[in-house]
Length: 370
Ligand SMILES: Cc1cc2nc3c(=O)[nH]c(=O)nc-3n(C[C@H](O)[C@H](O)[C@H](O)COP(=O)(O)O)c2cc1C
Image (cartoon, rainbow, N blue to C red):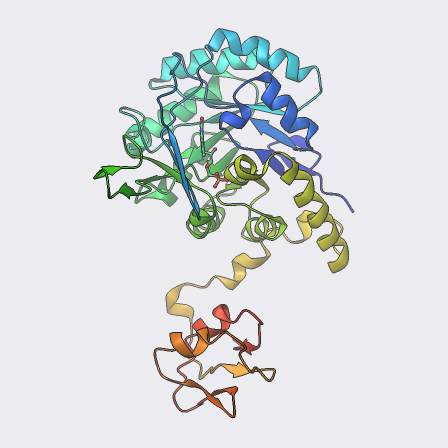
């Protein structure tokens, strides 16, 4: 059984990539990620100018974090040294680069190729910062920037997209047409994490990007949509906390996955935990490689018109005497769930088969066969 994957023609020992962020902000951080077992690392966004860190710039809540960082505070020239040391370790390094014009793109792309990186990721979907947030809203500009990067180098180019747009499928197709080798998705989602109501001001001094568990459902939908729209491989990003999340992305078509917020919160050690669990799961299920499950769940996603209205209703599989839990009763909008002799029962005549109780039941006693 092997976790290795072929991604854009590069052999990775496993599909876990550390995403562009401060976790990959210099050579020694990248080295740590590689030593922790990552299949590859994407550098923090490298631009033609440095951006000093504003303070404060990160705030978290129970489902993720908002950040207002823009890009690396190390110069393009200094990145040569950072990458040189990491490449001595035989690590797979992908340079995330940002450029505003095609000629700037060609300049930076050629430079990082010369520094020895294995591939390039275009970090042009950051949802904050003047100029940056406008970059991919224009299809022609996205095509030109991607094409210029692709034509300027002999290494694969991947383009990072985000759902901060309304025409994502169209953008994915344009990126493929321009010759990109892969698409990564998603970047953070434009957000305000909250307001300090005592001070009457936002938690951070400008709009930022939200990441972490809270964005996973949006990211999964984005990755599935892109996988269905294009033939080039997809690197799934957003809220990956554990091996199950990795499998979800792979089953929706991703070839690799990228992790950021869960590593910030739990440390690089999380990579090995996930790899161990992933290996155990595949072995337990009798799979030899990730190729065997890639895209498996895509066929379960029908168009709305294809879904037939079947008379499904929820059933209880075990005797549930609730203990302290009555979430299914409280949340049933149709009044179909109640107790009889302290045991959960479902009234078939009232259940409309919505499925909410199935997903809420912590004991997995309620099911609906669809
Ligand atoms: C603090 C922080 C800094 C980030 N910096 C970058 C960056 O420099 N370039 C980039 O393309 N994405 C950047 N990202 C976005 C991540 O690479 C990733 O796309 C996003 O966080 C979603 O993944 P996650 O939910 O696993 O964090 C950053 C995210 C965070 C939280």
